[in-house]
Image (cartoon, rainbow, N blue to C red; front, side, top):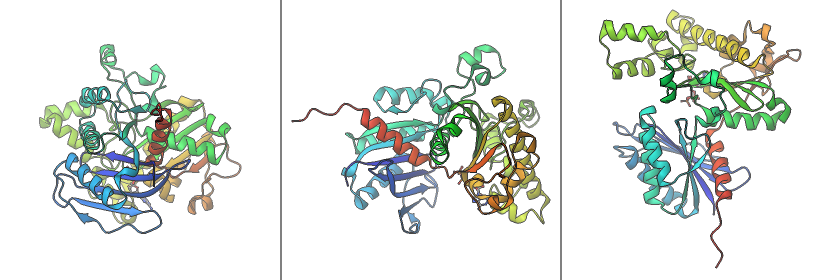
Length: 400
Ligand code: ADP
């Protein structure tokens, strides 16, 4: 198999990968993940298209570099590395600099290193992965796909955070995230409906462990809920979403919380987990909410805040023609979709109960003004498409 594309989505403690066979669009043939990197119980789980996931295998990986090495060794044994002609990396933060997918060069890696203070959680691991692949496969093109790039057209009024202006000039502004998912959803929306519907006023709701929304008009993002970091906006699995900034000042003063302790609080101990005191997983909370008022509160706050944000995104767009649910919660939870959409009739959002219950692609009622859709998002496929496009633009080596 020639010209396959490897996609890598590296976090601080995990790497998700997928291998795509050539095609238009490229098709996923193998995928998997390494979890708990640098912790006890590191595992590699793999899945071949058309068969069930294999049982997780224990591996030794103290850091992302060693994890990447083992992943490439596994791929070499399983499919052979010579088939890989391009590697696409999901990069969470591209700062103001990267507004489109980039071919990775030494200068790009240097620039990413410079951007690390913007995203100390993801960028160092992502750079380690690029460098690890570069050492093992020095002649294979690597491509960086940025979650922030989708939001490149944010109007100044949406990008400005109301702090002293010099902070904006120093890069403290709304960037927005989940952009690879949003780019995929827009392509799918145009494909399953029409280019006209995709060019209308669209609210994209990516509701997974991390959750955000984007308001899109004429295929350009005009506003989004995440901001300088992915902590902003909606209530999430373990992230707080928007907070009164005064709460943080109060906690620094009253509990002498350090920057690391605040980071831990707002990113890993808040949201659904913080409110429920038990779980960040919506399935657990739905199961428990009849008997546990904390689980009930957590789901209620999640849905209420999501509903308020739909109102805000609709205001940014001057109305809404399509609302798209995606992500683990958006794609799977009938109850959460129904609860978010209740009382949004004033925006023309009205669900058809049966369509919603069976998880149809279109879940709005026939007479509703706004089409409400469920689209399975696929960030890896979007990265593979981007890599294919970048590879096609590269000058061909002269024939001998
Ligand atoms: P990530 O942001 O980590 O990629 P996902 O998009 O996989 O997250 O979403 C994870 C969330 O989706 C979890 O809260 C999980 O409970 C929720 N979820 C997955 N399947 C269902 C389901 N059938 N019903 C309700 N929630 C679900």
